[in-house]
Length: 209
Image 1 (cartoon, rainbow, N blue to C red):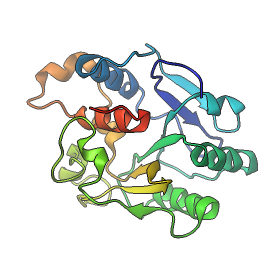
Image 2: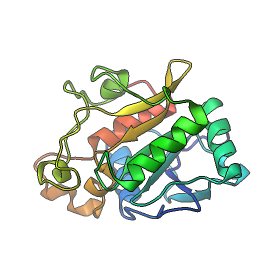
Image 3: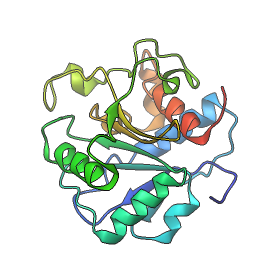
Image 4: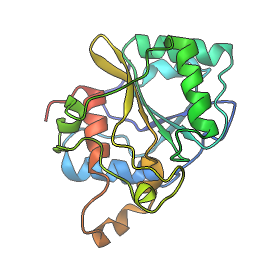
């Protein structure tokens, strides 16, 4: 995979609505700039899942509210990308384990990787200490606490693990919406809620804190 700078790359897929949380990438990049010294590309890249360009980037974000139904080329690329060391952070914008995005995405993962591939990860997984320390596992979002979606607080994330490393990190917590604001407004927060994004990126990039 090419490049020495971290690029926030987003997967564009044919079904559903992939173009969510449009301010979030800039917010995450601002956090990486603020807290770390890793070199960064300033702009988000959007790459079709069916494109061979997928293999040029070690990190991708995939999200949506609606149906996820990969075509044959998309499914083949997704599988090859993950099996060859790529990392995909997938976030359900519905915050709903029974919603259309959740059910259809999990069905896609079962079809591609097998029915047992996507599993809950322990709340002491290294991703929770790759930079900041999250002793209780995944941080809660305002959407969970305010009763959005399925009105549950999900105290876990799921993942597909390849060779003892996460290849697909899957969240029903709606981090995308949680981080979807102008980074200049971060100063009004009592606690920066994008810190977990830094952990995800540094874990994906294999950077030691």
